[in-house]
Image (tube, helix red, strand yellow):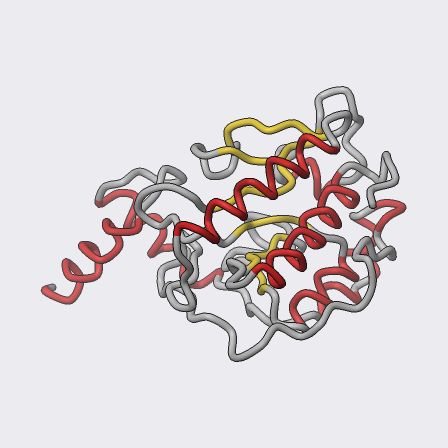
Length: 228
């Protein structure tokens, strides 16, 4: 029993607004344990049925090319089912601000097809969403309620990683090159294409993350524009 309450206290330190920040939220996330996804498998992204869910963009890559491999080991991920965050290789305020500025610049550059609003999945913090006038291009977009990406900023579990949806081909590349991994509930409560992207540690890594965010926009908007 003491271990249970110790884990609960640890969870409260990182709990966010996606779940009730009380014992009921803790028990809910704990009950999801049997659904934990393999974070590194790429098998779903070669499944014709999964590719078909992505419509005409199911077989496309939107990255600018092959990614460089992220240096070093992957960061450690929190033990809880939710929130889904990294707990090592964390960065400071300078990198946090550069990341937020980069996301805002990307949103402004593509404001004809993307809007920034409160995350519908996290229920707090800003997120990139497909603009209202764009028809949902595939079922992946519908399943995330048109949300493309969000940064985990702010109090509690804000460590400036990101969640976002990418095309199956880009999921394979990002996972293989160690820039991210599948969300704990990928393929169950969120699409297989829903990944966590690790927080950038350097300006060079930030440039890679920016290219991944751009690829997510192209995929989730149905490639409505040429995004350089």
